[in-house]
Length: 76
Length: 200
Image 1 (spheres, rainbow over the protein chains, first blue to last red):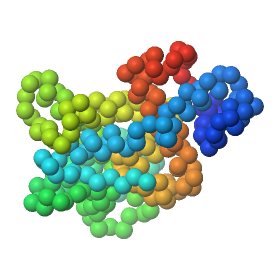
Image 2: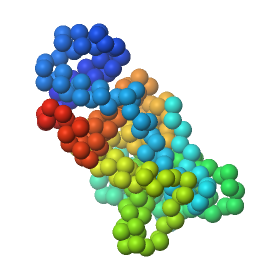
Image 3: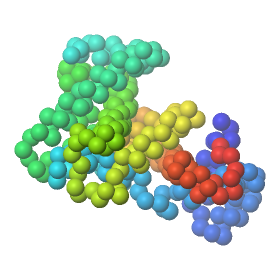
Image 4: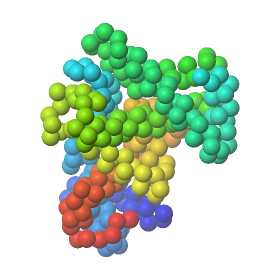
């Protein structure tokens, strides 16, 4: 659990940094093991991937009778 | 249908850590949400859009029968309702997949969604990843449910759970990255973990 919290803290801090500052930050604050974990998670950070919410929204919309939107989720 | 006092006492028992109360609450909320959603979808208004938060609020009004709920009860109810919304969508995806395997026509597919974009597999993968997250960090799993299945904004989620908005946003960001990786890992382990290291 302690490692999980450390990963979260490092992930959130690193996510706010652009390269090369990100690498410098992780080099300084993370063990090689933690760094690998954080960098692996950063690959899946929101800025790099399809909006997460789309999965749920598409699934909900497909529940509706034809041509009618079923749910209107609000995401910011 | 249970009387208002029953749901309030179930919520009290749940707040006190009674696991059985939750097992009774979920199906109760599930069926109420399902009923309200079904009734609204049958209406003839083609532009009608259901808001999960509106559905949840209506379910609360009906189940609490107009009693003034304690704020703490309401927060618990909203969390449970978001869980029930997740279950409704997952059950629907499972039923449809089962229907497809049977070659049956149990559920009409929405022609607006291309065949290769059927969201069922993705939703079921997300549900599976959430189950693992629940074991590691149940608080984050609840946040994901509130935000994405309950449709509450980050601000509303923060208010309901009495957290700061920054904490909610940060935890959700971490949870989403972890869940996405887990989902990809399920489909293709080599892509998710190129160096083949064990995940946290």
